Length: 450
Ligand SMILES: Cc1ncc(COP(=O)(O)O)c(C=O)c1O
Image (spheres, rainbow, N blue to C red):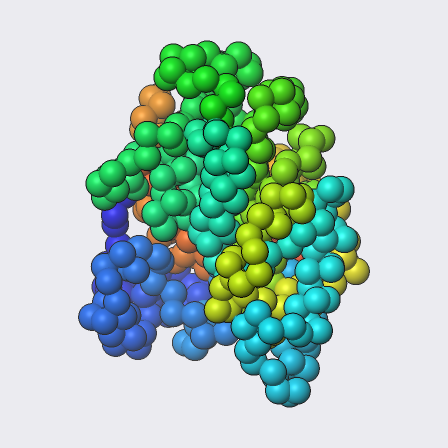
C-alpha cells in the first residue's frame, strides 16, 4: 500500500494495434512538468495512479497528448459504463448547457424529475423513492442516517457491515468499512457498528449463513437490536459475491428481526455485473440501495433508492444537499442510462464476462503468482500472491499494473488489503477482440515481472 510510480521516463517497446499505441518513453518526458506540478500542489494521497496524463477519452480508449493510446480496463474507476465521452451523454450535456441551466439546488426542475422517475422505473417494487446526491460516500452516509433514524423509533441501533468492505472515505462510510488500516484515524469508533466475515471473499472458507449468526453471538449482538445490515453487492476489494443462498437467508433474517437490508451498489449498478443491479444476482430485494459511479458514465452524481416509509422520514428541507440533482449531471445520467438500455449493454456485459472468465482463468492456471480470480460481467479481480502462498503481494501487483501501462493497457493502481488486487473493469461497450488482446497483455506483464 502507499506506493507511487517514479517520475522517471523509461524506454519501452513501441506498440501499435487497433486498440493501443505506445510511441514514447513512459512516463512521457514532456509530461513530467505536469506530473511535478500535481505532486507539488496536491496531497501525497493523490499520487498513487499510473503516470498517464489524460488528455482525451473516447469509447474504450484514453489518450495522452503525446501520441499514446491506451485500452482502458479501468473505466476511470468503474465510472465510464457507457464508454468514455459517450455520444448520448455528450448530446444531453450540450442540450442542458445550451438552455442554459447549470444549477438548481432543491428547486424543482424538469430534468431532475425525469431522472428520478427513470431510476425509480428501473428499480423493483417497493423501492420507488430516489434521493440524488453527488458522491458515493454521501449515499452510504445517507443510508446510515436513514437506518439509524428508523431504528431509533424502534429502539434498535446496531448496524452490521462486512469485513473487507469499502463504502467511501468519509467518517460514517469508514465506520461501516471493513478494512482496519483505513480506520486507524477514527479516534472514537462506534461500538454499535459491527463487522462480520464476508462469505463472497474467496479466502473466507465458511460460506454458510450460520457464520453470520455465530459471529453476532460471539460479539454479543442481540438480533433484535440490529437496525440494518449493509453490504456492497460485491466487494470492491475482491469482486466476490455472496453465495445466493446466503443472501436469501440474510434477507429472511432481516425480515424476521426487523432490520433493514441495504446494498451499496455504487460499483455494481448500471449493468456492471451483467444485471442492471448487482443484487438481482441474489434474487432478493433490499430495503435501500446506493448508486454512484456508473450512473452517468461521467459527471458526479449519485443516488439513494428505497421504500417510501424509510426515505420519507425527514420533513421538508431537512434532508437535502446543495448539488442534489445538478441539472447537467442529471442530463449526463439520462444520456448514459438511455444508451445502456438502447444498446443492451447489460446483456452484453454478461456475455463479455464469460470471455473474461475464460481468459483470466487461463492466466491463473499459468501463473502461480495469481492467487485467485473473481468476478462477474465486466468486473473482475486478479489477486496477486507470493508464489506458493496465500500472502498478498502488493509490490508485484503494483509492478504488473506499471508494466501493463507501459504496453498501453490502462488500470488504476491495485486495491484491497495489501494492495494486491488488480481490478479489471473496462467500459461495458468493450468487444471480445479487445478483451482477448488486453488479457494477452496481462499475461505478458505477469511473465515479465520477476
Ligand atoms: C462500493 C462503494 N461504495 C462507496 C464508494 C465511495 O464512492 P465515492 O468515491 O464516489 O465517494 C465507492 C468508491 O470506490 C465504492 O466502491
